[in-house]
Image 1 (cartoon, one colour):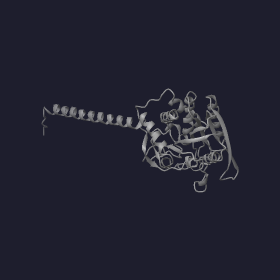
Image 2 (cartoon, helix red, strand yellow):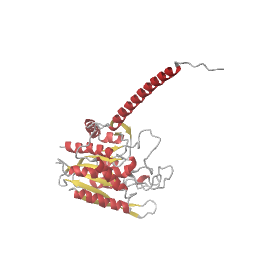
Image 3 (spheres, rainbow, N blue to C red):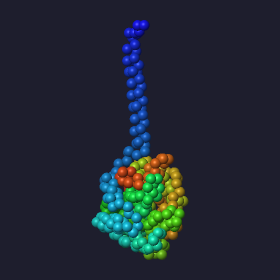
Length: 338
């Protein structure tokens, strides 16, 4: 049977296709606008690094650290990193003091030499503040589902705090400080080979440092302290940490207010985690009211993928801009001290 052809069908079809195209284009435009807005909200795109903070340079420092490979306490790579950081800080005008101590290896029982690194600005001043981080890496990526005894680089967890303090050295070289400032890099933060057996081997360096402060063996008196840990996450989210809020609520609120003024939206003023970290010995033993700036949700809250203590804690999952934003807030805090 011959098929009847509607002479208007072509124009109707074209009309419908054009209308559909307009709807699709409009939907895509709205989606992209929403995504851009969300991206700006997440990344705080209104923030611009000042001339004092170089985000690319900060990322280069992180890469340089990670190029050394795993850096567990007592390793050759750890010794090499300490030499690099010491030379860097001295070249930029800081005074560097080594604080050696020993710990027992949990598997062999042999002594392991560890060293805290104290980088001082205006060492003659007795009124001081503390910025600190750990610079060792965990021996293995024990949370890695594929290879928990594999190679752990520790870019964010172990490297990011070092890179931040190295970057801040450039600014402090030129900053007219009203108080003495110490950067302290702790060794032995997580010298664990078996989580259950070695649970008492956390925070070895910060505990030793805190004990020395309590004994009066460290010059000066610290009015407050800030610990930075895991602050290079590309998807940075910094919440109040519960212990920090309890020990020094005023400093928490002050830091987050500075971030707000700088339009750094990654600082979110609400409690999200309670974390055991190097700030606990500082508060409990040394009585230095210290807070912890830490993004424990790596890469993001609720993510099914986790980089913490895995082989994916590498520079590719980190950001110099994240390091720069935290450095910018800390620099402004240092400027505000009277």
